[in-house]
Length: 230
Image 1: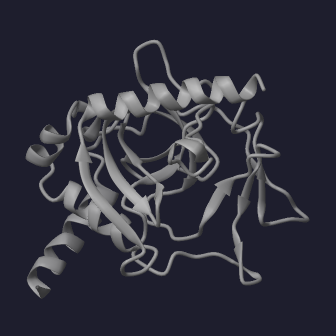
Image 2 (image 1 turned 180 degrees about the vertical axis):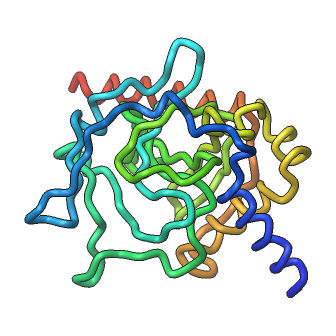
């Protein structure tokens, strides 16, 4: 067991640091995000993070607002009311995940919604983007390759899996290719999300392919549009 854990940790370190001598994505938007001087728990972007960006491009790639950079544990999230980014407060203190750092850039897809009445959590879609760490508050372009299906209690809490443009991962189109070319990556992702809230808190229902991920995305875009018109 120790050998397996050591191997997984080694792969995780490799994934976080890997850039194969390629430059980071040129499609990282020039977002002027700043932490308020009088409120270090708040980041205000140049646009509303929820409404100011399209969910997807014409080529099928997605926009991702980075809330938690690769390797970090500080639990920031976009506030649905203001569209700003806030450090989540729990028990009176800024929340930190009591586990290993995130194995990719974690964030949300703008203008998406998975509603409560259909098994969701009422939030925008969550996504983890494989690639080097990106500054919190940036908006990056990524390719959707699959989904990790999760239950948080009885709520659907799927994590879409994407790859960052301008990195070796961007050559990947499917979950199977990710497994074959970056051995152990999907195991790391599933292990992390099944345990980062504590043992037994999350239930993994396995991985889905790009088509399943795209179906979830299209549905969440449509639900956002429907709720925006109410």
